[in-house]
Image (cartoon, rainbow, N blue to C red):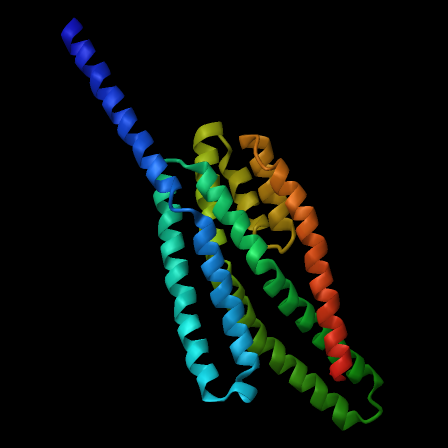
Length: 244
């Protein structure tokens, strides 16, 4: 019996060593590299689409290559998160989530700010219009915009944020397993991730409360929020200067 117990202990030690080796190996995947590649592809794609008229056909070729790169990096990163979740590497999931949130925040906030500005200008034009026919036309175009464009924007937002969604889902699963988070609380946290700005605050709350991590990330979030607001203000000034 003693030999059997000893063998069991030896086998457990070997398995623990292998698991620790796997965790170290997974940690070396460095989500920051994937995030930087993703950000480069995303903002490069937007740049070449905007500069299409000036750069000509070559811009479309580069934009298409960057579009493919976005999905390739996204798939690789999602695989990395799922692999990390299997060994309960919470650091990898947290780092992936926040890196992607920080990198995509200017793009998402910029698009959201521009869209909000257009909608308010549209409503303002409709209210100020003195011609009934023009008013009806503006209302029809606004409804068509909401029906056609908004679903497209929501789908694009979901795709761009897919690595974050997978990362936070794995993060919640690990947290629930380790600390007994209830299904209701987990569901609430998951749906809070659908709300911009609130999602980062909620993720910081989970990180600090359950894992005693995230104080540095909280400071970075505050700094990054000011940077994002500066980008939105700059975008607004550019739009006004162009007379849109």
